[in-house]
Length: 346
Length: 113
Image (cartoon, rainbow over the protein chains, first blue to last red):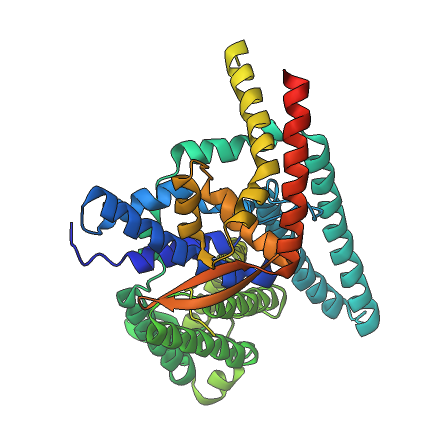
């Protein structure tokens, strides 16, 4: 084990974890104090044992403080509707609810705009009404559960955590926040290539076939593609910017996670629009105005078009499901606050 | 849960409640000179009054919020530490609590004998 072990990072990570459950008003100050106290305990333990400070001693100190959540709980007093005992359960349920609410807003907006009945004030009023009702029901339900369930039942997960918690897990968390540059580089190259292709070479999407001994090619992106093109490219560029910024920062923080949430919402909106909008594949009249493919070639390509559109629709649905799942996960990560902690005295 | 375990849990609960009542008195009495959390734990421990760190540190903050203590961040050995010291209100409360404690001990000695 190295004697140059960076226990400060580990202690900061502990303070970050504890910070999620600390009162917001004094969070930074308490976190700073926790780190200071951990350092005192470390120094004392090292002197008592006569050993140099290393990872084992640092972890032993953390073990003596206990899991961050139970340590942070001691800074709370009974002044809340949903307390720290039940809050860890309340939070993911709330995030899931908010995620579903967000999807409902996107789908609702899409349907309202499609059916032509869009009224800004009514729409905002409805969404606020739904949002507050959901929030109210959740808070009420959890406050009721907290006040009617025996504490030993509610505390069961904490007891289990105290039994099984391993401070070494914080080391894994520290490495998880780092960005995988190789993945980002791969995605950046792909995005640049895709943008260039969509902007300059979309006419290469099509069907090439040999009819009567002659090779022919007919593009299959319809004139409708031009409606979507700008937005698809905008989405890809946003992803590109996101990846570049992330690579420059080299770690995840809450800003980057919110950035990602924004991109996901954009993707979901785009996918919904393409799913409900005009079909992407068809014979472009602009192509026919310039080229003169043989009738048999044209008939053959037209015969494949329903397959193109069906396949694309299935792809859109699969992508929608994936994006929604990722959006819920991202929202969960945002609120879990995996961010770096900058401790300093004012 | 066996009866022995129930008894041990019950005893632990009451023991904690009993200590919780006097811990404020013990802490206030040690803060004439400024102390940071860990040094206070050691000092109390040296005098035979063991306090769990998870109990003491939040308690110091609560006492500060209630206006009995004052605190300052100080850089010691290039490390920031939060020092707590009793203030005038704290001293007045401590004096009252000491009187109350003396009276309580006398009463309880009579009750328990």
